[in-house]
Length: 476
Image (cartoon, rainbow, N blue to C red; front, side, top):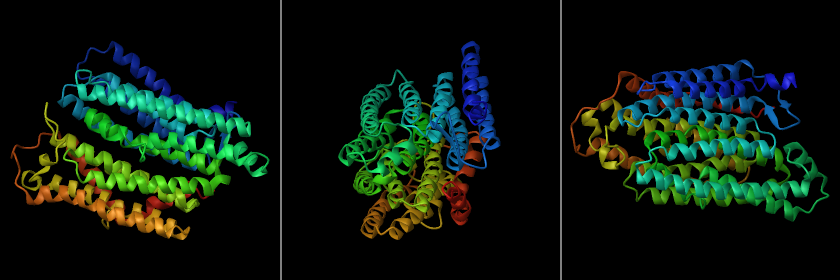
């Protein structure tokens, strides 16, 4: 048990720090909540260090098979902490500017990160569910924090109701799997299925409910109805958080369940994911064209990206899983930068959430127009930006596994998706601005956003470094 606790030190560190931040914020009189913000960032930094320091050289399963520490979990936790640290930096600037600053945002964010970390190391269906609910309940509250906004309240109610429905689906699938196999631990489930002594029909039904629950949480079509409303209705700082780090935890949950627990049913879940991938790419890319609100456009873009994420998982190979991991990390960086640009261009009581707000940005500020160009080209999958390689790696593995028709369909929808990203670039460089007012932002905000955009280009020029890291997560 003592050895087990050693590998739980990052989670324990984050939990203790989150409780400490809660106490400090409760007694703080500072309207800017600086102590809460700095302690939150310190919490993430300490957790990041603990994740790296206590990472084992081998895969270690603890607490009777319910918690695993391996290369994949360590990498995902490290990226979750790093991404959330930058997200909170953007968020603090936004909340301060719009007079929405509350300590609860950062406290709930820390508990959400704890849920993500539990999901990343969960090796048991109940531990996955506990991590997922800790994440989800934190996000519901964060969306509803702007209580005077009817849009935020409506978004929170929709998110909560549909999230509860998804949790019910997931629990029903878990109960069916347990009823058939007699276990909730992934290796036990896989071994029981391989023995071939149980009825496959009940297993497939349970698997379908699990996939439906996961698809809801990821925002895959046709279970995507909450995504556009939540992205548009929630404050931009909350949308920024939802669109980035939680996707990594959802990826971990999907890989754990399908690859570790239900690997003997690979042909069945490959066919289901293929349908979800095509629907997500179609719905996301086609409906995004009609959007005039950039947050809503990015929401449909997220749905499409989930479809591409599934492609690497569908391949069923270690390289395919690594490609999907590369994809979700790349998407988190791109989404973080895109919403950071929305925060940069906004000002008090007027968010830059309309496409028209980007008109003539090159005349107002050439540098940040270039940063947005990098982000949009990357999301569109234009070489040599990071987004091109994320699509390249998953398509390469998909074709290698024999899914040539699916790869062709994904390329087709990717070409369609280029349009609405290029539209942003057209507005920035070829349209006249509606205002020539200077962009008001701190030097720190400008520096971090610049680094975010340049990182997209730099990793795109040297993608093998990140891909080697992702491959190491599945090499064992």
